[in-house]
Structures are given as C-alpha cells and as structure tokens.
Amino acid sequence: MSRDQDIQLEKDRARYGLLAVVVSNLAIAGVAVFGVWRLNGNESVIIGVLTAAFTAVSSMTTAYLGIKAVSNTAKSMAAAAAAPAAAPPAETPTTPTQRTP
Image 1 (cartoon, rainbow, N blue to C red):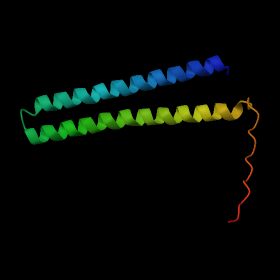
Image 2: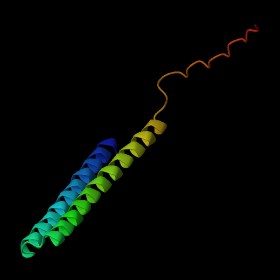
Image 3: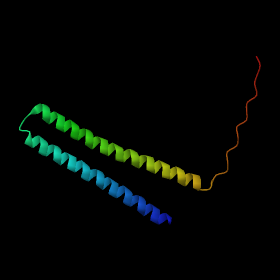
Image 4: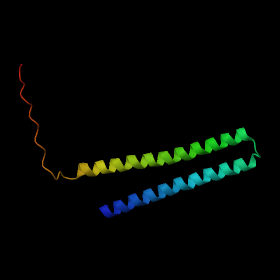
C-alpha cells in the first residue's frame, strides 16, 4: 500500500469508528429516555436507569478514545523506527574526573 492509501485507510477507520460510537451512544440514550418515560416517576429505578446509561456511554467513549490513542502511538513509533535516522548520533557524554578532597 502506498502512503496515501494508508492515510486514507486511517481516516476511514477513525471516521467509521467514531460514527459507531456516536450511534451506539445515541441508542443508549434513546433507550434510557424511553425507560425513564415508561417508569412513571419511580425515582429509585429512574436513578438506576440513568446511572447505567451514563456508565455505558462513558465506557464506550473512553474505550474508543483509548484504543485510538494507542493505535496512533503505535503507528507513529513504527514509522519512526522504519525511517532512517536523519541526524547523526549524539556524542557520548564523558565521565567527569573525580576530585579528591
């Protein structure tokens, strides 16, 4: 694959991954709203439904962002390892001589 194809593939993965997370979060929110509407004011159960919905949405979003961050880091590390070193290696530091009191 060429570099342009790789970049386009990464853009597509990010776009569709984000779309999947957003659609899932909207579905969870829709089910939670419907559940709250059908409970007719039972406050303790409403709190449980909203807590579960919030947990699901935050977990899904955090998982996506975490996986995306790790993927980006791994890709940049692989690209850096594959690229030839542009700068010459730095000089090795010399050990200072010890002074005796």
